[in-house]
Length: 325
Image (cartoon, rainbow, N blue to C red; front, side):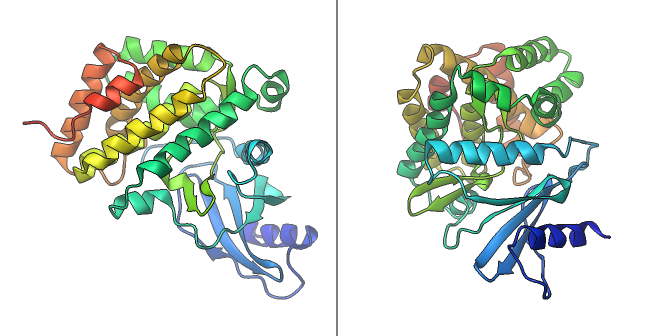
């Protein structure tokens, strides 16, 4: 039996499709999974199955059990706000799952790349992220439900921090210390991949997808990861509105921090943002749209300077340069 046939049998066992022909329509997406759209009697659904070897040039393996973690994150997030994540309909073989398709909701990345920058939506993203963090902070049940340190290390710590450390002797001590600190903090439920490509723009606000990196860890990571993408796109486009959107995102997030002093979270997020910016030009998963050597230089030089002299993420965003004179 092929893997695709296994998925179809799983859909039939879950009662989502009948005995007739079932077409798995491939959808474009990230590097870490197969994604299909399937028409069912009750309407279209999306089926997702994680890959063991990610689709990148470098060798990059990750446990496929992360599919279970994503399902748990989506359900937990819906418990905080049912509008913030799609409904999971069934778990399937190979750690895949089916979820409800959301028509008419563009991907935030596509909106940003097309020049449609809405600071209000960026603020809503910040509020959505921090709501999950605040609801799960210092919660032993959530911590026990997400014992995913090995997966987070394989998908985030190793490729984004330690891989760069292996190739940068000057910054290696700071990057390794940051990796150790990130791995040791157990504060709240972290999505792990809050990127514009994983956020839908719905009528009810942001809908978060692709939580396969979910872990109980440091919430500063999610804030840093999302801000990093906005700052990279600001360099790519030269659009000052993306800087403003990043600032609005951070400001909205800050208002929801209630589990520790906000300044501590923002400083950790600033350090992580500097490292992630560097990783998107030097790590295993470079930003695919950042192809201009000058853009890479701008990001690299600022990121390295910020690694040497860390600043809180709100100050980092305010001082971010889209180009150098």
